[in-house]
Each structure stands twice: as structure tokens, then as C-alpha cells.
Length: 409
Image (cartoon, rainbow, N blue to C red; front, side):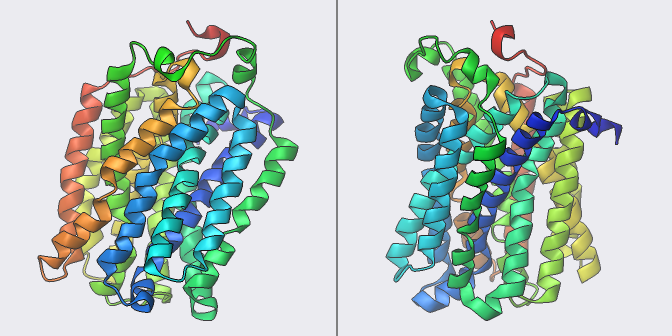
């Protein structure tokens, strides 16, 4: 528990800011993952194959860089807090509208618009939190913030398990409008970033000027986040389909829910542990260890042979996947120049999403060419991506503990 001691040293305002950023990413992920649980059901209603529905996931991921750039630039210019509130309202609105999609085309358009709004949340929330806390707390807070993603996955699984048989897939998306209430909490409890206010009166450079001398870094971060997104989405997006197709567990079943619950419990543990550990051993080393330790867990995760072993594999794979991810918020913010800290981390993250957006469709393609075997497709994908991620981390820079605000050069 000593690794998490910095969290206890945050004051009340800092805790509210961290909580709001955590909840923003949790509810954003909740809205995203709802679709992954009902791919088969939606495909049947629109009388198309599952691959056609995975294009909705692709479009959401592909749209996120647009949102990261748009909302990130707005946040750098007008402040983190108001743009974060606008972003939360918009992604909740598009989630709600998805419930009323009348055709596959309408569904695809709405999920693209949802992706634009979703793309802005992570970068703004992370920069708001990281600029509001002491440097020594960044590792622990980074792990906590990124743990919002698996928490959102778990809430989506819980909603699907409890409600899908009663309200259908469309009803789930109506519930997806609830995150809009987070705006009320942010408005009452969360102040603007002091680091942003410190430079608010200064002339702010344009994006191209601010990025001068940093383009190689930006390209590297995009490639790194491509590998990270292939890692996380490769382990999560088609997991429920794997349960249905390979394990023959119907959607909404208790067994399917338990596996997803264990998967997300592992993600929570991994994010918190490796995020805090990075404060001691370094950002890159912590992420590389987590990525490489995922490889020996993969056989248990996909080929455990019993629900108990599969559950253990689901838990351990996400300890490693989200353990590596738990370091990402602080790593990207520490590497980003001050003038584009609202833009670059989120844009690099979401450009990585764009480059990795084919993950679900590619895994489906691999599975179909091996007799519908999603276990083979997901296992092969994860081994290759874990190795790629470790290599990119080994080659890259680190700026652990760099000063923000007036401490920045």
C-alpha cells in the first residue's frame, strides 16, 4: 500500500479534480463498451454479419483523433474545465441518440460522432489532473485515472448482465446518457488548472509554432499509442464475442459476467500497481515489465479449459495490459510541451487509436479463417503486440518528475 501513499496526501480540491477526471474516463468507457456487448444482437436486428457491426467500433476509434485535436486545442485556449464539461455533454448526447438508430447507416454515423466527442475527454481530463497534483503523486494518480477505463468496462458488463434481457440493447444506450450528470459535479467541485491559469494571460502560440522541434516526439508517441491501443482493444473488444462463439456463453449469462468482472478487477489492480510502481523504477521500465509479463499469461487467458482457469487468465491478462496502461497518462503529459499539453497527449493517444482501429475487424478476419476460432486470433494478436510495445518503449524517451507550470523551461 505504500506505493499508493501519495494519493492520501492530496488535499480536498486535488481529490475532487482527480475524481472528476477518473469518472469522466470511466463513464466515457462505459458508453463505448456497451456496443461491444451487443454486437451479435445488433447484427441480427439489422440483418448483417458481426463484421459489419465491428465497423461501428472502427469508426468510433477512427473519429477520436478529430475530437482530441478539436477539444484539446479548445482546452489549451479556453481552459481545461469548461471544455471538459462540454465534451461530457456531447458524448452523452450521441450515446443517447444511438438508442434510436433506425438502420446500420444511422448507427455508424452516430458512433462516428460519439467517437469525436469521446476523443476529447481523455486528454483534457488527464492534463487537468496532472497539472493539479504534486509531481510525486503523478504515478499513483496516473494508475488511478487509467483504471477508469476498466471500471467503465465493468459497469457496461454489469448493465448488460442486469438489464439487457429487460430493456434490450436500445435501452442500454438510453442509460448511456447518465454520464451527462458528471457536469454538475465538475461545475461545483472542480477548479480550473492552476498551471493553465498561470499562462492564461500570456500569448499562446499556434499549434504549428508550439510543436516546432517536437514533431519526432509526436510521431513516436502516436506509434507508441498505436501499440498500446492494439494491446488493450485486442484484449477487450472481442472478448464478449469470444465468450459467445468459443465458450458458448450467452450474452447476459452469469458466467459471462463473472469472466468480464474478473477481467476488469485485474485491470484495476494492474493500473494502480504499475502506475505507482513507475514512480520508483521509472515509467518505461514499469510499462515494459507489464507488457512482457502478459505473454506467458495468454495461454491461460484463452485456453484455460475451465471457467476457473479462464477467469484466472482474464484477471492476470488485464493486470498486465492495464498495468502497462496505468503509466500512460503521466508518461504522455510529462513528455508533452506545456503549450500543447491539452492537445498532444490526447491527440497522440487517439491517433494511436486510429492506427489501431482495425483491431476488432482484423481479429474477426483471423478468426473466420481459422474456423471461427477467436481464441487463436486474440492469442496471436496479443503476443505480437506485446513484443512490439516493449520494443517501442525500450527505444523511447522518459521525463519522470519533470516540472509543470513556472518550473518548466
